[in-house]
Length: 282
Ligand SMILES: Nc1ncnc2c1ncn2[C@@H]1O[C@H](COP(=O)(O)OP(=O)(O)O)[C@@H](O)[C@H]1O
Ligand SMILES: [Mg+2]
Ligand SMILES: [Zn+2]
Image (cartoon, rainbow, N blue to C red; front, side, top):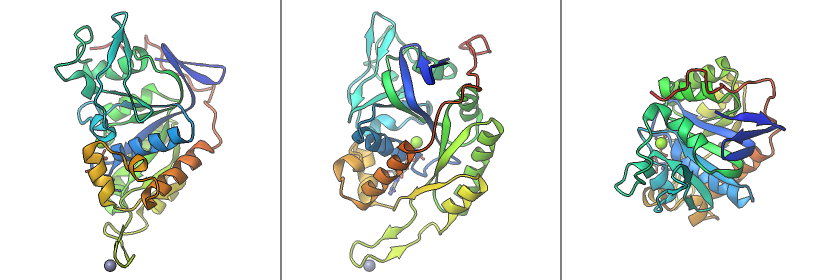
């Protein structure tokens, strides 16, 4: 699938220098894809070269959230050129299901999509590749984590007990697979009244911190419930770009700063699965 050389990830058509970050959640609807997009933009604004691979092939939503309109282009009938939007290179199943899809590259078979997305896309030089994982610990998410031992897991949860419990399960799975956990982001932590500034903890309090302790990692930040974030996500206008001064955009920048300043190097002792290790498309 890829090689580790000189301390960086070498893909068939690109490199990843600073981090392969798998964004995960226990269940859907906690804001995983929204967080992926806004973090990617915050990292790009720091001058990083960033790609998003939408690995949620059944429930893809990255194209809508990031406002992707261009379709993919094909070079020499085999290499996929990812469209760039808001400075982010984006590859999603969503780009292969429309009528405008390049004929030479029919919708990749679901089971082989990750491999194709990693190998046949001209990613070029990336600092970070963010992977929007399918929610939960189903076969898909598990499969992806197994194949990418150099990925680091970023767990998104709301403060709600049920969300925290299921997110805990994915963290345990990652631990079992010896995948590092970068940290927890608690989304929808509170709602702040725009009139009086009073904070209401709609989904409870303390869930993200508790999960961080359980998984021996850090709480990277807490993001408020924010109506403009929701509207922006629906319209392809990510909040970090649209309203850089908003409280939530500042939180996103803090989190991306923490991620970028973490001590990290790809572990040379971990071996990516070789192509022969049962990775054939089926
Ligand atoms: N902080 C937030 N405040 C308000 N709405 C949010 C926030 N984060 C995400 N949303 C909204 O919640 C819904 C689910 O978000 P999404 O990113 O699709 O979640 P997931 O990928 O976990 O299924 C979307 O309508 C999105 O706009
Ligand atoms: Mg999603
Ligand atoms: Zn009020």
